[in-house]
Image (tube, helix red, strand yellow):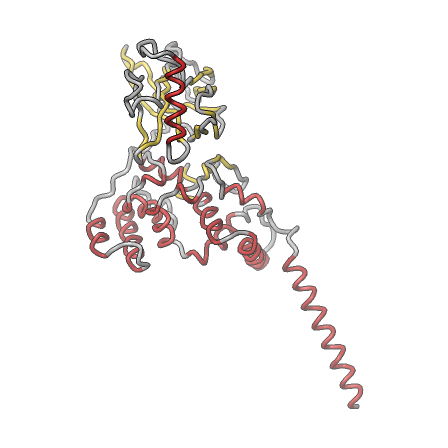
Length: 367
C-alpha cells in the first residue's frame, strides 16, 4: 500500500510538472496574440506618421525627447506608469474574438510580453503616441496641435495637464463641450503632479486659477483640404513636392505657407531682406495657383526653400550657403510644416474660412 501510494504520488507530481510546463509554454507562445513588434514605430528616433488598424486615425509619433517635460509629467500624473503596458495591450485587442475571460487572459499575456520587449521609456513613448484624446486626436502631437496649435514640447504646464486629463474620458472632459469638467479635471492632474513632486504647490495653485483657453475647434462644415506626398526628412535645400486636395463640397481658393518651429513656437517669416537677419533664412511663402479649386481636385505644389528672392542682393550661392550654415549651427534638426489657408467666395468677396496644417518634417543638415 505504501509503494502504491508513492507511485501515485510520483505520477501526480509528474503530471503537475507537465501541466506547469505546458502552461508556461502557452504563456510564452505569441503567435495567437496581436503583433506587438510594430509598436517600436511608436517610439521613433525621428518624428513619423504611423498607422495601426486598431487606432481611430494615424498617429504622428514623436520621440520622447521632443515631447517636453510638462506633457511627460502630466501624463505620468494622469495615468500610473505601471499600467501603461496594460493600456497598450488593450489597444491592440480590437479584433479579439472569444469571451471576456479569454480577452483578459490574452491582454495580460500581451502586457507581459510588451514589458519584456520594450524599456520603460519606450513603453511611455508608445503609450503617449497611441493614446486617444478625442475625435481626430490620437497621440500627444495631434492633441497638442488640435487644442493649442503647438508642438508637445511647447506646451505650458496647464495646457499639458488639460491634455493629460482627457485620457480618462475624452468626450466628458472635452474643453469644447464641457469646459467646466475640463477645468476640474485639469486641476486634478495638477494636484497629482504636486503629489508626485513634479510641480510645486504654490505654482499649482496659481495655474489652477487660470481659465481653460484652447484654439477654436474646426468646423467640419467648412471647406477642408488634404496635404499629401510629404516625406519625414529633407536635405537643407531639397525641394519639397506635395499636393493639396480639395475634399470639400465647395469650390475654394488656397494659399500655402511654410512654417518653422523655433523658440518653442511655430512662426512664419517672409522673404529675407538681409542674409544677416536671424529671423529670415528658413521660411518662405508658397503661393498656389489662385484659380478656384473644384471639389475633389488637386494642385501640385513645390516649396523651394533655397530659391533666391528677387530682392536679395547677394548671389544665390551665398544665400544657399547661409541657409546650410544656419542648419549646421542649429542645436537639432530644423522642424518645418506647411499651412494651407482656405478661402471661399462670400457675396463677391474672398473670405478665409479655415487653416489646415500638415504633419511636420525635418531639415537634415548637409555635410
